[in-house]
Length: 70
Image (cartoon, rainbow, N blue to C red; front, side, top):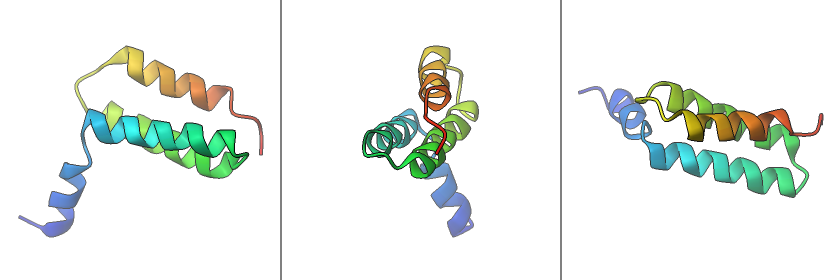
């Protein structure tokens, strides 16, 4: 298997998506809105590729929506 494909597959988990969401929260709290947005968007991207857990995906969309313009 291609190594980059294996790396990408390893990142497709609910735990990794949750980690990106949590990092987004941390960056938002520290005032780093651009970084927070990147983490939230990565979390959403991962969750959209997994079997749907709409509550967790909605939480990340909400976090992104309330992020101050930076």
